[in-house]
Each structure stands twice: as C-alpha cells, then as structure tokens.
Image (tube, one colour):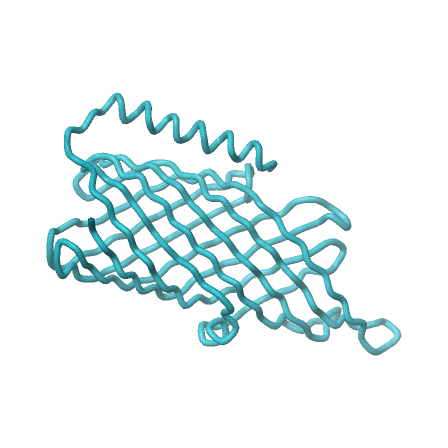
Length: 254
C-alpha cells in the first residue's frame, strides 16, 4: 500500500479517537509513562527478493544476540483514567545465515527492521482496554548467498531491497494497575487485513513489580508476526517472519 494511503488512514484513525474522546469526557488529569525495554529475539520464517528462490531463516536467541548490531526499543503512553494514547518503537539491525537447500549452498540474510505503532485505547472495564492502532513497518533486507549451478559449483549473488507499509490493528489489553506491588498485563493485536500485510499479529504478556509511584520493572514474552508480500517477477518481495522472545522492561511514571 502506498505511504500516502497509510498516512490518510493514520489521520482518520486519530480523528476518530478524538471524536470518541469528546463523546466520553473524563475530568481526571493526564499521567505519563515511559518504558525503555530490551528484547532477546528468536526469528524464523522466510524471505524472498525478485526472482530468487525463497530463503528460510531460523535463529535462536544467542545467535541473534551475537549478530545484533543495534537495538532501540521504547514505549510511551499518556492516560487520563479512561483514555490511553500510546506509542511503541522498535528497531533492530540483525544478520543471520540462511538454511542450505537444493538451490542454495549457503549465505546470509541481513535485516534492518523498524516498527512504530501509535494506538488509542478506551477502558471499558477496570481490567480491560480496547482500541485501534496503526503499525508502520520499514524493512530493509539484504541477501548475500551462494547459489548452486546446474553444471556444478556456485555463483555468488548479492541483492538488497526495502519496503515500507502500514498495518491497521485491532487491540485488546488486559492488566491490573496498582500503585505498588505485583503487576501483570497482556496485549493482543491482530491486523493487516490485506491493506498492508496479508496478516499481522502481536502478542505480549508480562509480570513484574511496581516499587514506587515512579519505578516498575517487568519481564515477559513477545511475539511479532508479519506476512507481507508485494510485486511479481523481478519486483517481488516477501517478508513472512515471526520475531519472538523474552523481554525486560524498565518503566517510569511521571
């Protein structure tokens, strides 16, 4: 989907949230929360560029950690007791060898992955928030592979491409919110719907402790699943990947 359409959907979604907020006025003051976090991810799935055959990737957490060149992850939210507006930014630069096959002798896939989500949620129960969001994905994939020749030997092929797309998301969040003590939360998202990705899914679950009105620490697990494909022939691009693994979060209320 063209980036212009993505921006239009984001603007319409934000406008809808504002209109809903006017229908349900809340007198409570706004509070803010920032949360840098670290994820140790597994990745598995397949990717393809142009006329090259599909390449399968399956990496365990310590391999990803060895190849992690840069990782920036930050969550931020503003809440007034009923409405929650939040932003989640995740950027990773990783590289991993591909699985050998009949067509591919060996090689490496490098991926620079940016995910930025903006969402608006409304509290319908003390423990349940629902809403909509928009997930902007930017993926730059590079291939450096040795392809088997029919006559014998291998041929080295290097190729790089990037794609940007937008996924609308439906969101539900389950959590408790004590001033101090044990805390837990779970967040489920589904989207894409063929407007960006064919299918997009995010699942998160955390538990931790809030030490004071300022500080809390959580640990848990996260899954990000994207199935995006576009073009044909030499313009074909496929990114069908699951990114999943343990997460540690450091939260600050202000």
